[in-house]
Image 1 (cartoon, rainbow, N blue to C red):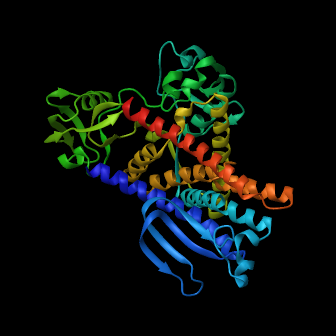
Image 2 (image 1 turned 60 degrees about the vertical axis):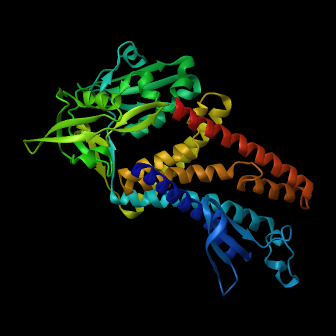
Length: 452
């Protein structure tokens, strides 16, 4: 139950923060450009908090349903406007002003991501060198000659320094023609290059969690000892008294030789009351442990809320940047993620990238809860990624979104007069239909993940 509460609270916080950032963009720019704002609302439905500014009578609202928000501006198309207020109505402003207000929401989402990455790069980021753990026999990687211990140094023309960069670059290279141009450095120091041709399997490999397993590459070395690096607060292991740096020796007198053995036992025994034996500072400790249950791909599996001590720590490097360099890195990374997302959206339309990567609120809530439990730094990085996605989504030329409204403004400029109410209504109806289709697909993906 505590995990569900954390998940729900993290989701509410994530959505509220991102919506507040987005709507504040519209609000701030509208005010600066002389447009009167009537209401700034976070959430929908019945207000649970309300304040009216004495200065300009703007109504600030927090509503009961925290799944969105809006900024209501003075507009003759929505309400009667007094003659003295006509100059501050949205529809009476120049088209360039209206475009600036509409674009401000998505722009603030991108700026929010940049600020998060800027702070992150100044505090320090940990990059994990892309050294291969294992190679699966009879796989694409094995056929190309890759071996355990090889380090990926380039994908196509892009130099690679971390597993994160490798993942994005491999997907980007693969979706074009099903071929991955991979360069790696062997443990001896010599460098090799080969093309991994996955052919028609490229779309399957873009499904969540399929890429490296499908290529036959493991990012984790074999025989990882069952030593605990982190215990999730409120999880089964935490309730039992398991601590970070404990080495689990056995469960129910079944000896555990590596992390995989622990993982397999826990996963296969949801709800089981067990006795765990561990070594804590060379002292043997026996603890009762009740394995919790969770759903994974439609299957009930066990989970205890622990993370392995990563044997790849020696491959990690901590990088810190000064304020100016960090800002440059933040802008560049946000730009790279934006371009990558746009390319993958296009590849979804062409059928080269799996639509199962499209996530709905259930998956977002799961990630929000998981990242919140992993730490504040991980959670805010998650917010940055979702903020970029939200900015891109709102710029799509769908009439009900900011991008669609911008299209209406451009059409008015070309036509020389406002579009008729009937045309705008039909556009809104099309927009609602397209948005419902998109949401339905996202929900469908969420349900598929839950039921397998």
